[in-house]
Amino acid sequence: MSKQDLLRAIPKVDIFIAHPLFNGYSSKVLLPIVREYFEALRRSILSGNTERVDENVLAEEIKERYDAIMTPSLQKVINATGVIVHTNLGRSLIDPESFEKAKAVATSYNNLEYDLAKGKRGERYSHISTLMNALLGCEDVLVVNNNAAAVFLVLNTFAKRKEVVVSRGELVEIGGSFRIPEVMKHSGAKMVEVGATNKTHLRDYEEAVTERTRLLMKVHKSNYSIEGFTAEVPFHEIHKLAKQHGLTDYYDLGSGHIVDLPYGLAHTEHTLPEIMKDAPSLLSFSADKLFGSVQAGIIVGKRELIARLKKNQLLRMLRVDKVTLAILAEDIKTMLLGEFDKIPTLKMLFDEVEVLRQKAETLRAKLEGVLECEIVETQTVIGGGSTPNRKIPSVALAVKMGKWSPNRLEKAFRDEKVIGRIEHGHFLLDLRTIRPEEFDEIARAAVCLVSS
Image 1 (tube, rainbow, N blue to C red):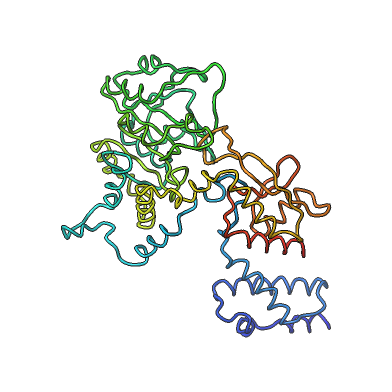
Image 2 (cartoon, rainbow, N blue to C red):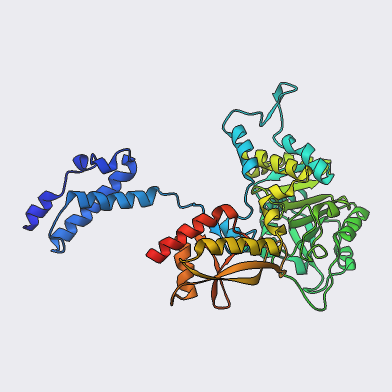
């Protein structure tokens, strides 16, 4: 066919988009794709690179591009890395039962800011304040969208254009370049560093107190530890010093947990109830780390201080919605009932090695005849900046397939949305974070990559 005949063979756009393949498609998405594709096709014809125009082939190719655009990029994956609180994979899982109860609230009108007893405007935070008081013994609570927001709000409210004393060894930077010094700067607070990188003493805090000091702050070292010739000041001593000087003490805990951690970690990290015995003026932590709930930043402390936080105009930008509050409330009720097995993060954390080994046997049996798998003992981390440099035991399947390299296996499984890890030259599926209901999905993924 001549170039002119080929150009004439390109369908008219308005007729083409009526093709049966596009039934129910969004014209706002489809039209730009069709026009762009047809323009590229015209250029290809004129340059002599296209010798045939098939309307059905065009429709299939355009459908593929449309589907790629309309497929959500945020998708479910299987976490086989062994890292329980994996920030890149969404941190803590939400308890399905809590989610279903929250769904019933979120999909109907509700009393988010309405006092049913008084018949007038209420406060959204009242829905968890009584529950949190029962759980932690705090006077009041405020919930914002994450712990970074909590830190910013506290600093801006109590130390804008004033001084905050913090140990030099606690100037944390976490993922995404979130740095305590930068947060202080943008909050309007002036940071006063005390001590040395490896050693800070109570006298360092005391000597730094001036008439411009408003906060004595302690920050959990979320993703690192300082070893060797070291010293840091326990929070209860900072709390006592702040009280002596009429100042506010604030503990940015980062990742707070309710129960003692297993595998010898209990002596390295204090639980929230233990810290609350010191009656901190203010304490904040992430709800979606070891607390095991939805993404949020929880601030607990003295009632009069929480009241001041609520009056800060920034709260309007940082507050959480009905879904977050509903899920959080359900999870706190679960904790109050002592049903920690219903909190997925805690369930995975407390699974014993023998349980993981049994799970590994079951998964290996499902993969038999498809992939060669060896059960291996390994170690993993909790993740989420919760217990820096501390490892816990785990059990994994070391996967092999012919001459495939570990990197090729990792990518092949990743293409099937199963995220594992490479360790000591082997591709591993770590059972610490794989749930039994995901075994069949992993088996289907294995069949797909073998047949590809």
